[in-house]
Image (tube, rainbow, N blue to C red; front, top):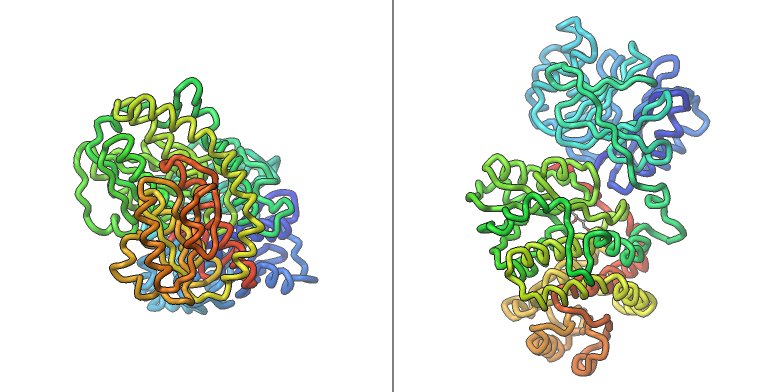
Length: 611
Ligand code: AGP
């Protein structure tokens, strides 16, 4: 989704902003722009990559110690030069970058047109800056006051940063529903949609809250609430290193992140799991353990890959805690007036912590009195701050648009939670509890071993890269893994892929099977093993190409399969964390072999901050 970078201080703003925009490229975008103050306001914007904007600006005088920049992911108006940000007021005095959507912009636009405003593009953002200009003129007030008044009228979500020609030493920012981080340096401030453009300059940051406005000078940061009262900024220390947001020798972030998984899963468990001592410590759960123990129902809300993690969690929680679990697409849950009863707990799962649908779903459940528990990767994100309590996944920054290490970290954390609650509740036999703690502890090493399959999977990718469709099948704990495998493939290789519960195949998808269809089975040793062998035979009988993820040493399936991927043996409850790895690699290699930009697949955004 859109990204904002802005700077004010003693450095040249343009290089800081340009580098920052490149760091935000992973979020997904289709145009980019910057505005600088240098003997007047200069706005440059262009459809396409940040590098194209950079080419356009080569040789131009970009001297300025204040500036704003933006990468736009089109919502209102097609991606083109005129709809790109920054947008400027009619009198060319104010310019704005904006993330989010102003839902009532058409009404405001109509009123402004009646007052003589003319618009060059189709965006809600251009309407907003004209609206601020109009209020300023009508009320004869400061830009700050005009922004405050305008935002009271606005319906929707936003982060804005405004640059005013008449106040060349000040940036004004405000947020509601979209993230904004302010980095605090010595005599300088950095603004961005997430910490990645900031981390190389300073570790001291302020996460701006909803309905807050920031008035920022080089050496001063004033935060105000919507009633114009000054707030004390809460300065936090970033715990990410620059290396975490760079490729470190890998061809792509996605491959780096796949290979980081032994470490990231270890980090998710570190200090929380002590298999020898038989303990699980989850600080975020402490005050809510009894709520979980007495919960009548757990409702998991999430989107995409995080939703798949929720599906695995459904199996884990029902087995270990005996609490009924429902897993909902946040986008459906939020609009359906769901029944929330006393004793229901909502678990919201999100890598970015900014997914609009998930955020609104949890907010509406919160209004209905539910306890909200957040599982997020990004520290300080909106979802983590909206939750009553939660657990961070600690997978580190995930830059590749296709989620990989965040998924396995989510599974590790969800498994820990289910074990902790089940143990406290007494719903897991002690022996099984201890066995699973050891199983979980062994996962990083088994993932390391699974990654050795990389070369073999690359060869497989070569063999199947020209297929038009793929089917992914699994049962039980491996059913969500099949869904996730299919999602990974379609995201980055643009090959149509369906994930199904293997037994559902005969109710429809089996009609697709012929000698051209690769069917990927996730068929490691578990309670469904014999059953899934029958499903493999059904595909084989119809000449489908069968690729199977099996447990090392499997004696039955290889004879039925065209290709076999052997993974280390693990209990079925934790096996998804291992079994998804070859599917991530298969998708990655097919995407690369087809020549696609796997880190920034077309049309996709890393954090989906619009509904
Ligand atoms: C996964 O590969 C995706 N790109 C996407 O489905 C993602 O999982 C989804 O948008 C949810 O994001 P979140 O975890 O940041 O909330």
